[in-house]
Image 1: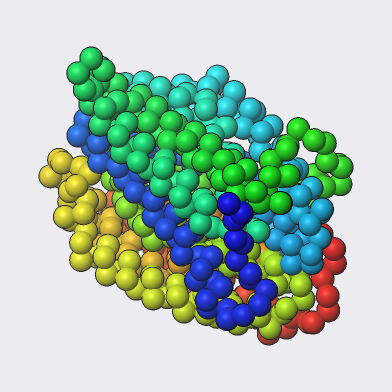
Image 2: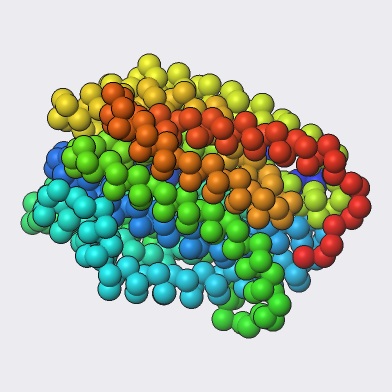
Length: 456
């Protein structure tokens, strides 16, 4: 059956945005669900196991910056080409993005497998058991990083053509598999031994492989004229296509890499309060992802919407779409603030069972809840700016204000606030980014000319 892509260029803006964004946000919630499922089951093993997954998970997060080079460039340029009605260009950009994804996956996977132990030792974890298991998790999860890499890039290409339903269904299939594999592989069932941290990694990679398979089958069986041709990645594309993808993708990739790098430095700083504090950071971040992954998902939708309308010269539609998206994100941010603040302790207790760690985790969630509304606006605005091709400006703002977290955390962490001072550094910087991004982008919209953009 032929798939129906959403028309982002005509009709009611809120209806088009909602139709595209809801499956993307639901996909983000599904991804959050199987991350939290991992944390819930690995939490049964203990906080040291959670710390091991948390330390290794920093490098799976770092990998999203690497693949962003291909994903963002491909998604933005495909959306703009679709807006101009240039289907052949859209095919070439998508195919080039997939070729870059394959190369990046091979390089990143080999590097992390060969350097697993020194990469984990960077964090100065206190337990030898934690270090060993973190290295095991890293070798499995990043050794097979090709699956999440292709999953992210193909999802971006689906979104660019206006199809967000198929990625949602694919991720639901991955979640079901993860729900089954997690308890079986982590804790063991019958003849299957308890694999602990390694089992969590195997379950996650297996789910990611299923998602990629479902995405490919969705394009082929759905007979999408653009996606099915993009998937023929063995066909060469001109070097100028790859250069254009890189030119758009590099700023976004650098932004994500620096952002993760800053978080890794902060994780190393947090180890001064023990491995339990690392577990708090990991679990708290996963719970908070209910907010930021959903906001990023909406950012992906506004990215495609902006890209297509920018390509078509519908500048007034770009402007109206952004303001309507901002209102939605403000409402979502207020909801997550209330959820994280008032539900802090009972929610955290689902994933960690040591009373002292639960108390630290509840404090983390209450402090970080203050910034949720601003963070949602920030992440959505980054998507909008990238849709215009302004990835460099978005990256500069993000990098500069995120880098402030390191000195701010060191200052506040050495006061009476202690570990809570580190969490306040995260919250304050997110508030500042949200305000600055909104102000800067609205200025762009006010000054924007109606001159037709250059061909990508």
